[in-house]
Length: 114
Image 1: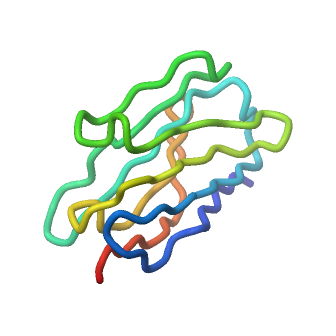
Image 2: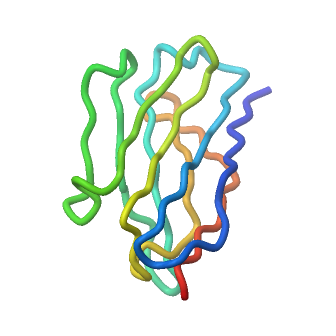
């Protein structure tokens, strides 16, 4: 059975940092590029960052570039998203996604507010 379990969300002040984690099981994690999406209230889900299966390449939403860092540990079946210098516009539910197999996690809420 496939599981993608996100954690690490919460309330953070503007300018602060947060690290999201996503632990995968039930599929061949190291064969899949992995993505982080977010969905803000009233908006469509958008791709924030992605990383290739080996971790050698990554890509970012323009507004996330130089503030967010995606990484992975294949030995732990885990992908991370480090959020730095957050702004209220980063508020939303963050979802982990397997690009190769199309699996989704249940999401973790990030709220940026003072």
